[in-house]
Amino acid sequence: TYTGIINSHPYGDVAVMKKECVGHVQKRMGSRLREYKKKNPGIGGKNKLTAKLIDKLSVYYGLAIRRHCNSKDNTKKAIWATFKHYSSTDSKPQ
Image (cartoon, rainbow, N blue to C red; front, top):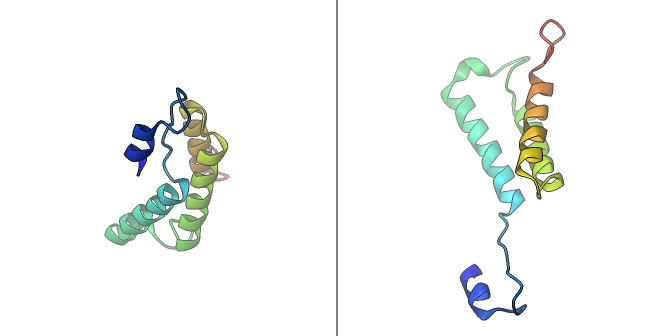
């Protein structure tokens, strides 16, 4: 486990930092969106939150985390950029 690795000091004085598994975080995002859609049926349907869109958002969420893992601000910007891109329309550009 992580605690065992820290206690064993495998790299001497170099600290071992734990990172969350991006795949797990990505999966939780998809699960939460599916659950939200199920509880709020009005947000699903054509040109709304579909299963295909949930899959896309989950993938781009994971990519944003992987590509910007060293900066919380850049990760946040990338995640919001994806959201705004997919919520943008011709009549209401974001």
